[in-house]
Length: 362
Image (tube, rainbow, N blue to C red; front, side, top):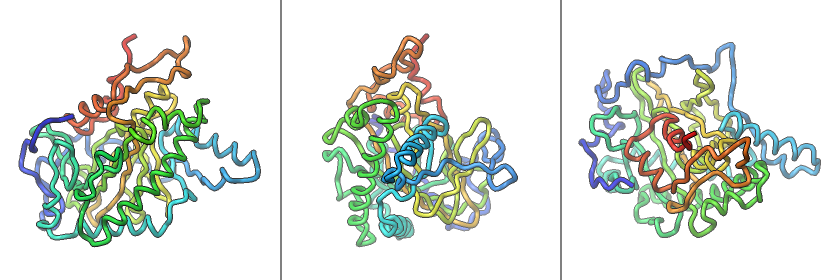
C-alpha cells in the first residue's frame, strides 16, 4: 500500500468549485482529447438501444425448476459476456436504499468545516476525499467521495464514519449488514455457475474472518463543462465484486462494450453488480471484469454508493485449480490483493491495464 503521508498537491474540493459559479473548469480537470466523453461513440437512447442484463432474483425461489435454471444461466451469461448486471427483488429494503442515498447526499451538502473533520490521506484513503492516485500533476476526476471499511473487523472504525447527519452511522451500519448478505448470496451463485463448491469464492476471499468489505460513496457535483472531463476515469474494479446503488434520477455510469460506451439505465430499486479483477483471476477469465467510467452533468448532481466485496489483503489470489486445464492454462500469476492494490493506488484508475499486467508470460 502507498506509504505517502500526504497528497502530492493541495486538495481541490470539487463541490466547492461547482458552487463557486465558475464557467470553465480548471486545467487539471480537463482530460486529453482522446479521453473525453465525446471521443468515442456512446450508445444511449438512440435507435440502437442496449443495456446491461436485468436479473430478478425472486425467480431463484420459484417452484418451477426451469425458471430457476434459466435465471442461473442468465447470471452466468451476464458474468461471462458483460461483467455487469442489475438485480431486483434482492432482499434489501427499498426504504433502506433510499435512506442511504439521502443521508449521504445530506453529508456532502454539510458545511466544508464539518466535512473536513473527516479529510482523508493516501495512507488508507479512509474518509472524505477528492482524488484517487498520488501521481503529481495527474489529471483529476470531477468527484468528491467518502471511503470507509466494514470488514475485516480490525479495520472497521465507526469513529471515522460521519457523525452528521445524526442518523448517518446507524444507516451506514445497517446498510452494510444487508448488502453483505446479498454479496454472500451472489458469490454462492457465481461459484455454482463455475462448477465449483458453493462456498468456493467465500473461502478464497478469506471466509468470515479475513474477507474484506468497504464502501465508497461518490458525489458528482454539477459541472459547467461536462464534455471536457469525467466523474471517474475508465477503470476496472481491482477487488472481488462491486454492488452499486446508483442515483436513479441522473444516469452517469457507462460500461465498455467493444468500441462503444453503453450508458447504464438504472432500474428503480435495483443494484448494479459487476465483477472485479480478483474474480476474473479466480475464474481464469471465464468471468470478466469490465472497464467502466462515469460522466458528469451540467444541470444535476449525482450520488452513488459502491460497496466493494473483496478478498483479504494477505490472501494469495490465483486461478482456481479446477478451472485450469491443458487447453486453458492458468492465465494469471499469483498475487496477494494487498500487492495488487498497492499498484492501483499509486497509479489511480487506468483502464484494463491493471489486471492484464498479471497475465502469465507465454
